[in-house]
Amino acid sequence: MARVKKSAAKAATGKAAGKAVVAKKAPVAKKAAAKQPVAKKSAPKKPAADRPTTRSTAAKTPAPRTKTNKTVTCAGTGKGSAITARRAAGTQPKLLSGGNPQIPKGYGDEAVQSYVRAMPGWKRAVGEQLDALIERAVPGVYKAVKWNTPLYGIQGQGWFAAFHCFDRYIKVTFFRGASLDPVPPVASKMAQTRYLHVADDGQLDQAQFVAWVRQASRLPGEIM
Image (cartoon, rainbow, N blue to C red):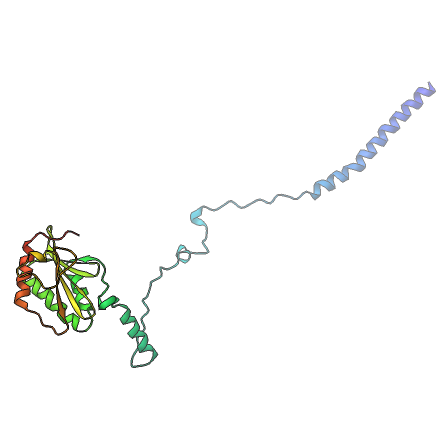
């Protein structure tokens, strides 16, 4: 019996000790709980319409840039004038061998006039004369510039005449010149082609030239 009582006393003592341990550990649990951060309540989000805007959309969009053409004006003489002269010269067609203007391929009167305007020295006056006489002989003549050469023809029927600059003369070509009456004076390697050379003295039999042009316009033209 004494042993049973001692065992019961030990058990009671153990329970009491366990309760004391639990009691001691409880404050630690409270401290741990105290360390946990308390979640802050976030304020309800305002609708998009109520939110203040710090930057306007106009500030984000850059203003359109406007291009301005820079112009340089040069007056008097000196370096500025020399630059202006070179720029002006750069707009003129290049002169090839014999002073023949380099003109882009084109159709119509303006292409031919561009060629004539670019002919150097005395050749320009001759070019203007030839162009005017051909127009007089064949009203509504069809014009073009190909291979840096003015061409004259009947639209849909080919070319009957052309001219080209050389050093000492302008060569007028009649593509069916061998069939003209009288035959133009300068022969060609091509059997049907004949030439007329107009030199810088400006001597041109206008009546004969117009007659040749009229005859040539009635013959089958050269297709090229």
